[in-house]
Structures are given as C-alpha cells and as structure tokens.
Image (cartoon, rainbow, N blue to C red; front, side, top):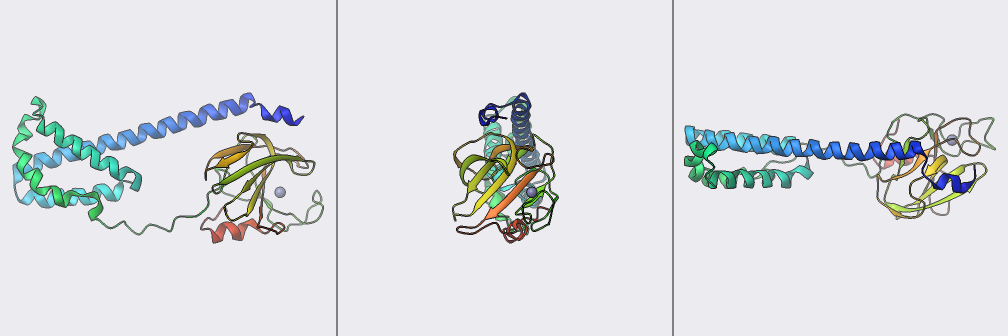
Length: 258
Ligand SMILES: [Zn+2]
C-alpha cells in the first residue's frame, strides 16, 4: 500500500469514528441523567425538612454525604448547580411545588452543612500516570521473546487486538509518523520527558503530526510491515536509549496492561 493510501480514512475508520462520536454522545446523556437524578434528590430533601423539622436535618446531612461519595469529582460542580437550580425552583413558587414552599427557611439554615466538599474522598487508588494504548487489556508476545520473524529479540510488547482498533496516546506528547519496512506504518509519541512510545504495524493514522493529549485516538491497528496479522507492537524508548521492556514501564507508571 502506498503511504498516501493510509492518509485517507477508510470506510472502516470512518465507521469507527462515527461509533466513537455516538459513544461520546451517549456518555454525555448518561451524565445528564446523573444530574437529573441529583436534582431529584435535592427536592425530596427539601420536602422532608419541611415536614419533619429539626430531625430531618440529620437526613439532609446523610443524603449530602452519600451524593458526593457516588458522584465523580467531575460531577461535583454539577451537583452544586443542580441544588442551586432546585432552590430556585422552590423560590420561584412553582404551583407544582407549592406544598414545599414552607421549607424555604429550614433549607437556608441547613445550607452550610450541605456542601459536597464536606465528606472526605473514599480512599481512591492513586491515579495511573499513563493510559492503555488500546482499549483492551492483555498481552501477546512479551519483550525479549525470541522469534523467527524478528531480526534479534522482540523489541516491544504486542497487544493482540483486531485490525482497525483504536490506538491511544499513553501520555500527552507530540506525534510524528513514518513508514519503515519492518515496523510498517508507525506513530511515534514523544513524551514531555523525551521518552518515545512507538506504535507499529498500523493500518492508518488519525493524527499524523503535532501535539496530542493523553487518551487521544492517534491511529488504527493493522498488520503493515513485517507482521503476520493485526496487532499493536508497542515499544518504549527512553531518551538516548534503545528499546526497554514496556511492561515495567507501564507498572512503574501505575498501570498493569495485562
Ligand atoms: Zn511485536
């Protein structure tokens, strides 16, 4: 295949891109549903307070405690916004909510205890510094394996994924792409510390050149170059060094790709 043929997205890649887009949209919808749920939580809290008086303050605190524990950090600002919207709805005297109007004062009094930041975050595992280069965990050939179709030893690790699978930037960095008779179509991600990640045997590129963010889709798995079937061959090359075993590199950055 001529290099330029890989530059144009194939139908399969366009389909992949469309699927990705709809997935993102669904994710957005799920988030909106979460916000709606939080909104509903806020309203019964107001009602409970009006009916049960001082005893209900404890209930409000418990609910406030559970809501942030379930919501992700990214949802926290939305949670606050949903509560503010709920209060506005009550204050606006919506006829559907007339029975709750007597809760205005107690709600204002309870407000200071109702902050999402009051609860400590439940022991979150340390955030990995890198992400998977493909969606699916699991490794094929490991670093250093001897094989008939490698000149010497295996200089990377293989991810046994289908042709056309998306390939992601493991960190922020800068992309360049090139053809090599052995590696086929390659994407090379240069990280801020100078380390390079090599993605090899690709079918095509999504990003040919320039800065990328961690997790960005940069290319698609293929079997170009000296390869017996679709997979991602992945190498880690520290500055001024040849290839090193990517597995300990992943593990030292908090991610187990196996
Ligand atoms: Zn390989």
